[in-house]
Length: 135
Image 1 (cartoon, rainbow, N blue to C red):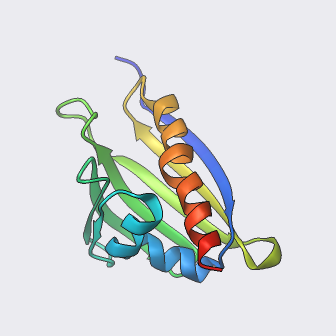
Image 2 (cartoon, rainbow, N blue to C red):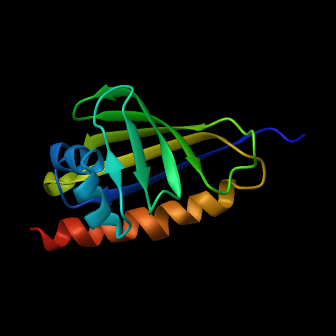
């Protein structure tokens, strides 16, 4: 059995950390900014879903407006696989923007690169466009 994988990805978004943090934890805004239906109970222990239930998990830690930690799994995780851990760190960037650093660990073996690309294609690119359109 191969060890779980870990990826780290980052992007810069044209909005302050407070707005990014709030949108990540608001089901309606999360769905709007990514293009996939989402739900979120924005408290420690609260459940969330994204992309029409393709992704699900629970909120493990919150440090407003700089850090969100979630248990995370997709419908592609093997049966019986434990949830992965997603850490989202938001820091002020140039020009009032945000540097979003994402650490995703405990990914089932062989799935890490797929999720690395998925974060860019299904989160970061649409988020950059969504926040830019709101300026």
